Structures are given as C-alpha cells and as structure tokens.
Image: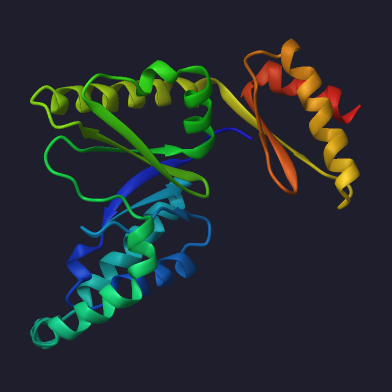
Length: 237
C-alpha cells in the first residue's frame, strides 16, 4: 500500500449558524465514504484525507450546500443562532473532549498520515523536540493531528513554527519512500496472533528500519518497499 492520498484542512464554520456542525460532518462522512475525517475542532476546522477525486467531490457537495442557503435562510438561522449553538455545545461535548484545545499564541497544527506519524516518532524523534515547545497528538484512524504549542516564553512561538516545518519536511520525504503492508491473522484465536507477533519480533533485528504496529486483527509493517516486501514474505512463508 502506497501513500497515495491528499490531506486537506476544511473550514465548515460558515455553516455554524444554519446547521449543527457535528450533524453536518456526519452527513459529509456518508457523502464521502472514501475519505477519512479528523476531529472537528472548536473553530470549525476539520482535517480530511483521501484520494483527490473524493476530496473534489466533497468540495462540490459543500459548495452546493452553501449555495442552497438563501439570504432568507441565513436571516432565519441567525435568529435561532443561540439555541442552535447550545444544542451544538451539548451534543458535541464528547467530540470537544477529544479535540485539540485552543491555546494562546504560538500554536501550530500539522495533520499527518497516522502511519507516517508513528514512523517519525520511532525513527525521527528529534523532529518533535525543541526547547520552549510542547508537542501533543490526537489520532483518529488514518489521520493524526499534531499540535505544537509554545511553552510560554517569547522564543516558544518561533520554536513551535520550526518544529511544524520540520515535521512537514520529514512527512513529505517519508511519503515518497514508505510503504505499508498489512499482515492479517488467518485465525481468530489468540495462538495465531501470538505466533505472528512473535515472529515479527524475532525479525526486528534483521530489519532495523521497519516499524511494526500490532492491532487486534492484524499487524501493519511500515518501511521501505524493499524491506517491507522481504519482511512480509518471511512472515507469510
């Protein structure tokens, strides 16, 4: 599996006065099942990842929805803005807990493919390190949203920006060379899982640049095309 996808940050804040944003995002998910959606942030931004044609289709869907809002609808929505927002705050409580907190100046946000983020964390830890900057991450399926915040000092904002740029450069580099192979367990029993995971662990020293990510139903192997191909072949043989 190659990393042939596009990540985009969309703002749905323009619909806030007309729709409950959580309901709108759910409609977007149904409209575009090929896309992965990150958490809806308090400012109305949401990260969306997937093939470019699907992103373009979602864009057209949102444009049509925006055009359908007549001026009369806008005025009516504005008159009901307060109760709608209260409903949104109540219904979106669980999402808000999982969203990134808004922070004072110096905050930078980067949206990464989750596999690339995990690979960077394992093999390029220095990318996330800087004085006067705090890095946190929220994973949501195939998308991980990384927040870099100033630790409060004046130099922190510059450091946060430097870390963000370093992550972006590293991500672009890795997208060109990484490949993921999914090794599914043929049996549902714990024995087969343990054998597969044990074999992966024994192969680790021979493939020092391969990342192994275990899940309940499979193991993901991330690395260069050559390493991942040989690794997967040995596990399956």
